[in-house]
Image (tube, rainbow, N blue to C red; front, side):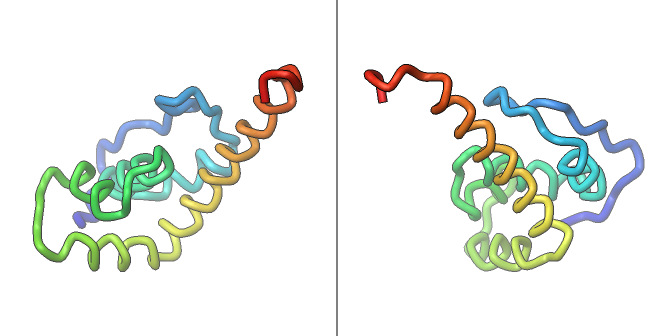
Length: 104
């Protein structure tokens, strides 16, 4: 994973699924490299670690599963994953509360 940070795009306030990131989550995502951020966003969308890594890097290697495991163990990536998953789960609970009981 390249640690290239210059010119990294700003962190969006919403995801492709419509989840709104909190300010704390946006700060954690901003601290990541572009590839790390793409990995976190793919993983939060439901991709496996290896598939999220493949899409983030654009490459395929036999060691993708191991590399994804090591990437998830990185402190900054783990903190961003935790924050993103918490935001996503919070949004899911709000959606469930809004739905009428007969449709659950």
